[in-house]
Length: 338
Ligand SMILES: NC(=O)c1ccc[n+]([C@@H]2O[C@H](COP(=O)([O-])OP(=O)(O)OC[C@H]3O[C@@H](n4cnc5c(N)ncnc54)[C@H](OP(=O)(O)O)[C@@H]3O)[C@@H](O)[C@H]2O)c1
Image (cartoon, rainbow, N blue to C red; front, top):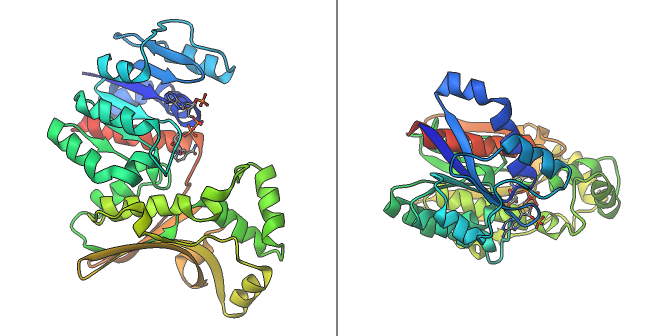
């Protein structure tokens, strides 16, 4: 059976995912008996297109790379109408993250689930703000709401907890959930002040023009909320997660940590104590002997504390076109296998 996909948001991740699908077409068929067609794409910049038998993905990736609009199979349906009417079995929601309201992604996800389509997303908005509601809707419809890419891109976190670690009780998850802040803290170890490092991080493309979401810890808070609700089965609101960023860390703080045999890290943490789940984001001095202390630059890492294995730490990229595109592939393949 061919899996029919719809892609809402054809930016960095949408294009990266399509590149992987094209490159690995034969491999996916041979190894997993997985065949695909992309039947619908919606994007503000390139337009909305639909072909029930499959779009020309190679041509669309080429056009998007040249910043040109799609030509073939254009439809004048609005995005919600496209999601509802298309014959896709899985909708990949890849528009921008809005951690205040969820943005248009909320309606995209709800419409897809309500019309009996599974949803795969790397968009933290719907996952952080309303995972329990979306999961309930998916369960009622007998479809899936898959969100691996919302936490540490394609590095397996959600699927690790639900798959290979199934059977272990996880009491704590702690880690580096934001590459930008980890890069800034790593660079500050050269003795540079926060403002100077932030400026060079912006010039290098590690930090956005408005870095608030990263440096104040809000991005990490979204991910902590997701981990609490998905892995720990809590029902936390994003506001329940205490949040402090790295803007107040000074070169003197960095020096002090070094003298103590420690290193500052922005740590996102979820803990289950006697059935009560809490979450927080805050800078912490981590002992140099801990695996998280050695994670430098834009890399992410998480330590799961479990009853049967003790601590398990996973390290990997937390962003990137192909790295996040892979998160969409892994969830789409998992739906295919089921
Ligand atoms: N890039 C990464 O490394 C990474 C890693 C982890 C998670 N994520 C998450 O993955 C999602 C996609 O990221 P991205 O980097 O691919 O973002 P992006 O490059 O900004 O792409 C998003 C695309 O969606 C389009 N779009 C926005 N609103 C839309 C709407 N209502 N209907 C249709 N199209 C719409 C945008 O068009 P306009 O540009 O014209 O608005 C843009 O082309 C985001 O939620 C992001 O937070 C990304």
